[in-house]
Amino acid sequence: MGMTYIPSTLDEALHLRAEKKARPLAGGSDLMVQSKRGIGLAPEFPFDVMIITGLKELKGIRKLDDGSVEIGALSTPAEIADSDLVPWHVRQAASGMGAIALRNSATIGGNIGNASPKGDLPQPLILLDASVVLASIRGERQMLLDDFILGSKKTALGDDEIIKSIVIPDYDFTYLFYRKIGMRKANAISKLSLSVAAVVKDGEIIDFRAASGAAGPRVIRSRDAENLLKGHKTEEIPEIQESFLDSWNNAISPHAMPLYRRNTTRRMLSYFLSAIYSGKAEGIIEEED
Ligand SMILES: Cc1cc2nc3c(=O)[nH]c(=O)nc-3n(C[C@H](O)[C@H](O)[C@H](O)COP(=O)(O)OP(=O)(O)OC[C@H]3O[C@@H](n4cnc5c(N)ncnc54)[C@H](O)[C@@H]3O)c2cc1C
Image 1 (tube, helix red, strand yellow):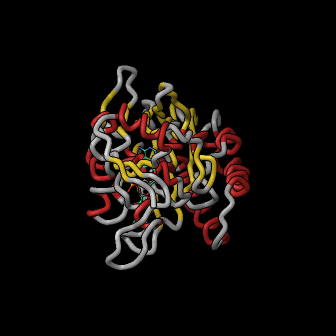
Image 2 (cartoon, rainbow, N blue to C red; image 1 turned 135 degrees about the vertical axis):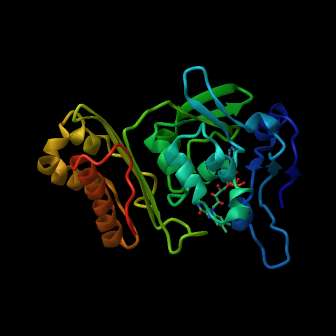
Image 3 (cartoon, protein in one colour; image 1 turned 120 degrees about the vertical axis):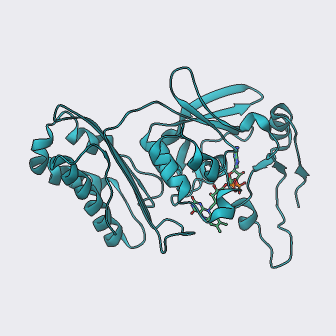
């Protein structure tokens, strides 16, 4: 059984990480479950653990000078969902995570660190080109979250590093869509999720992005598929829609219930595109149940 440490500063935590390879424990909602032993028994970790919940350097949500938003790794889904600084897609995902108790104890750093393809926050963050700030005694580095998450439960986190924060660049989309499909409305792990965003100016699709969650070993974005729409007029959508949908279908690789996941994703993307085509008022595109 490993040792448990409780660092009180980031510097102390980084030394524990470098010297003891202690694994961060934030909300513990993944780590405790993965190490559970049985009813009434405390989890036992086969590695050293450090409880990082007291590190103020990892807390808070703030706007940076360049307009981007920095979310401290210890921010909870409840804090993220409540913050006006956080982009809409990310707030939507945060507000649909687990039940109230989980939304007040889990963290964004843990959701990314766990790197489950069903995790709710990486999907909109990857849509928005968010990056992670990684700290170690060697200094800090920043990399795109899309590059940081390597696969199911695999990340590029060095064994001396801690996720310090997540930075989301400033964007202004004209059309937005978010949908998480679970077994029930609340407290459901995602069966499938999709975020879509587009910038349309004078009838031209200037930017178009989509990100699928739970449709492969990691969050999927396909720049090739996105490029099929970018630069086209919205009136051309009926001509180019099928090749875009086929390209997206080739990009996703759902393991379980592939037909359901493929058809549902296709339907949601078609719905989004028809809304833009039909000249629906700019803003959030809501899909009926
Ligand atoms: C009942 C229940 C319902 C759930 N529902 C959902 C849901 O709807 N949606 C969803 O996405 N998830 C859900 N989860 C999974 C889990 O709650 C989330 O993944 C959560 O965000 C994990 O955060 P945490 O702080 O609890 O992580 P922890 O368990 O503390 O850590 C998870 C992993 O990340 C690493 N880690 C944590 N913080 C850092 C850091 N700062 N730097 C580097 N590594 C770090 C840990 O070492 C560990 O490997 C649910 C879990 C439970 C038990």
